[in-house]
Image (cartoon, rainbow, N blue to C red; front, side, top):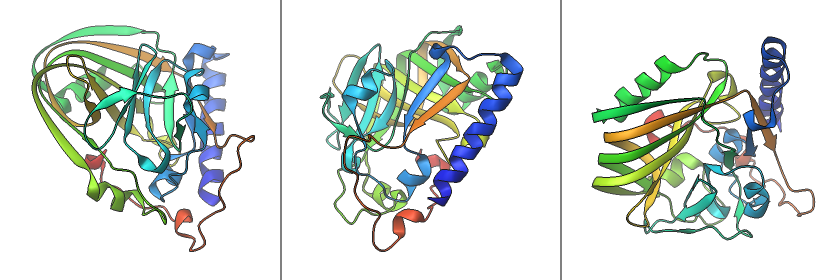
Length: 263
């Protein structure tokens, strides 16, 4: 539980600084997250919370599923699961998740992009628009993509491997000239043990039921909207649902590093 305690401490400190600087936080400014990145990196893929509960907390976000069975993307209240075959299907409310981040998206800033503009250049433009690097941002990018590369991961079997090993099984999908929406977040470095610091996007394609975790892209024309978030709330487990015991070999307590490019 050491890394969970560390993550909770960092979040508490961040919340205190925000409260002192900005005053009371409105509910719309909150990110809701299940579990922590440190737990996911270590191979804790058992579903903790059902998506019925998650859907009550937000209409926009990303995550995964029990046993790491694919990628989740949510836009405008529609939740999709993209499995390793690349096909996107609606999420059943009783599906479980070991890790997810959602919010109620209400744009604070918007701008238009004409390209082609690479993901890297777009991310730099986004960071230049952030009024502070001490809070989080929900980001929606919707439009035409000259190219879009995504991935998904097949369901894992117990004993679960660390995420770095599971990602070696990822299936990559390449699209060209497609309409899509990217849903994602930028989180500050202070929450690196708790969540994905920096940019993290999942995509859903408009014309075909496909998508996944975004690896790369080139934007042709798109509208970008940004929603500033000043609070991150983490739920570790559903107390009404029995939770599995820690893995006997202790591997779940070891933090594995994953190259940033894999996110």
